[in-house]
Length: 110
Image (cartoon, rainbow, N blue to C red):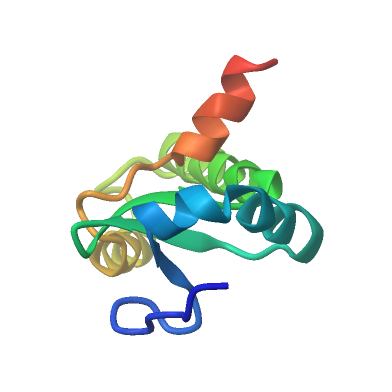
């Protein structure tokens, strides 16, 4: 198994795409059986993720909860809720999707 690179995300293995091709079945088994998330890199940059299917479900649920919060307390209505929103957005990279690609695949399969 390739050695983990903890430069970007602590304790999440980073595997070059070339190595992932050679150990794809093992990476999928580790995601399925151990709940392990593996970041696949291309030219040293994160390009994709192999993750257990429940990870996408959690992110989809979180997106639904944020949408519910927006309906119950629209932005600008409550400064405390707005503070929570701004902290959540600040902690999540702007490029991060609200719903993960795993969740999108799960939803498409329904």
